[in-house]
Image (cartoon, rainbow, N blue to C red; front, side, top):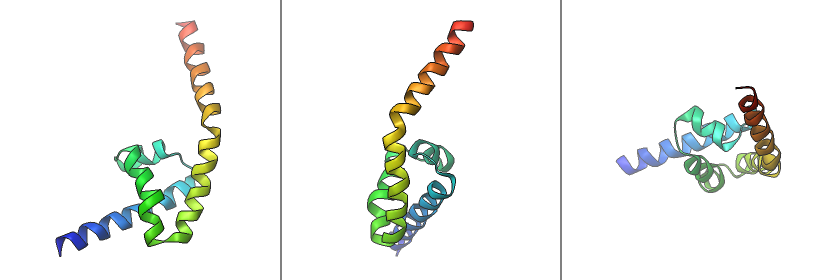
Length: 90
């Protein structure tokens, strides 16, 4: 019985995280921070577990994750630029 409850909790968490990512256009890192879990857990919930529970929601969250992945090099560059701008003035 306990295994069922754990599995149910994980499935609910996967759905909740996916909804958060979709509603806030959030990154895996942002979702992990919000829910206090690792990035790899968020990723596994959204890509593997969610597909078994809610394939439609899994497809929606996949779109957001794909966009985030395609833009990550831009975000990284902006973060680095910001870091060095602040560093320069210190």
